[in-house]
Image (cartoon, rainbow, N blue to C red; front, side):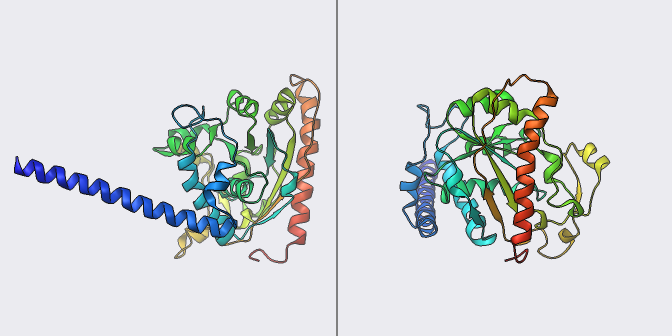
Length: 304
């Protein structure tokens, strides 16, 4: 009995210590984020429109507390590591919006930085909901993490429900083709899927074109071993020489620049033939490519 009492006492002490450490860490994060934002972190969080269930999460599993920690991590990358410049923040409308962006960088840091920009640089602050590849659901712990921080499996039904809730939905029409581009094809958009245009027309949602400059140089890929990627069930298997260098596993601290274009509205029948949709998609793709070209031309250096 004495041993059980000691074990119980130890367990209670451990729980109290854990709560104390968590409280200290949370306070430190709140203070640091307040410094970056220029206002109280929790007050800004409270201004984000959310539709939560009685369980404290939204219908897709987004948990504001998990999102809080994710935002703090993204904020470090956004303001400190990549020192992101944000242009056109005033172009983000309130209510539902479809953010259509180029994709690059081998890992989806661009999505995290767009999300940080919508929370930190846009008024009113927004949470970004991103559509992720189905294969991510097969990764241990990743599927739950993605759901808790607002990411949703990229199927049309999920996208339509999010927009009906008035969310800001981020899509990368290039998909895995875009993120796995080799260095010689940097800032050259690959083929766009048509689904986002059908979705925008069906839900009468404005499209904001987004151009991200800086991601193509963070991991310099010189090739892609497609056979090995297929064997491992991955979308790509890039060859990145910097990974062999000490510290090369971290992305290079390139300077990111995010450009939000003016909203674009499209009308018509969402069930039109692909040829009709391709013309509308071409307009959006051309706008993003033009924004990329200008952004690359105007920057003084990859790292500053």
